[in-house]
Image (cartoon, rainbow, N blue to C red; front, top):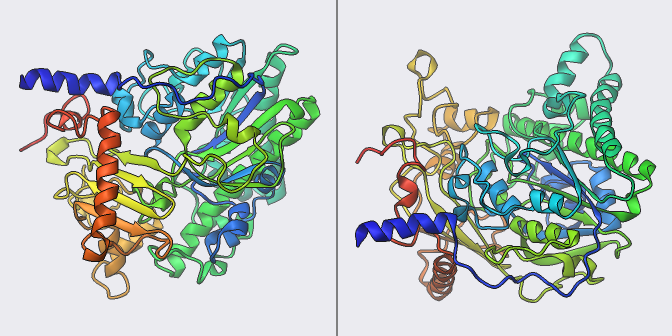
Length: 535
């Protein structure tokens, strides 16, 4: 019986429970072109969000005129979330419309894409679309095309946009001006997109996926100010409470925002070319990222908003401009949306819900009254099971007011072991932040945390980022927007916590989540860990 249950648990990873599709089926397929800009590690950072945030944030500092233009002409989603704050599971859910835990080995960083899982790119191609991509689509360690396998990659002009600050700093060092450097890198974006447009047949709808990785670490220290004129001191008093408001960290954030501004510049080229092509009025523009900022507390690999909340901005052909939508949406909603736009019926066994009715509405605020929650989660990022360093399984329910987090193995380290996961130079795992707490990307902010872990100034931040966490966490987003005060143990919130917990477990069970069915250990065994972990 135990073997049967384990077998069923594994089966649910590949074949989730079939439920009726919630996508609209009575809307005529518009068959728009789809331009999708999806930047690696681009969290919810853009100037247009600064305009709708109700408090000072780092969005007050960043300048993204092209993103803001798309927002003015279309829709800015206030509450958009990834399904998982790690690139491969986030993208697996995005491409398939499934929860990440229903995508087999796509549920972790170095997984393998299962072509038996329906995903939107092949369905668009089968519907007659010209489909192509530039740069990253899926996860590392395997063919990076994922669901785009067998489809053209338009990057003959090169990949310099994937490393803006590195390339720009090198060329500036060779005597070129910043303006010359910028023009050189933007020309690569232009030529690749031009090759894609030239390949499509007149009158044929198309889908172009542009996936730059420059917002993923590493980037050049000081590049935010040097290349984009972002003064780190302008971030004083605007940093979220989980980030130390100190010069080293402000500079690190400014450098990251510079890479976001580079993505905005790339978008400007794509918009210019789209208008020149004469197809702008028949093209849906979609802008987003795969999770939050890397290498900082509460960001990438965390289920707090800084890790899972992302930009989602769309311009609908002939749609109502200047809309701000409050619906809780999840990026797996994009797969059935794109399918319906192309006239392809979404599969029955997905959980994403088409956004087409929201896009075709003229309303702002809450458009779909049923969109009041999203599920997020994670299993394995870098932690592989080697030497007993098991991943940190989490699930969360996010509502307009609350974040409820369930940490299924609270005795494990949330960001990986303090002893590290590999060999460190000179054996010093304390200062080599690549191997210490490996689920947080290395960088100046992480180094500052490690270096100041015993200082009064830094101890709280270090413990918050790397310390073990209780089994349950509860945050009141309305009164604690940075989610640093855990209310789970407060009797005053016991009823709210119980309701959210019951609701989350019910939804996960209905979805066939392997973490809660059978013995709940499916993801702790091969092939989800690299070898059987130590007991």
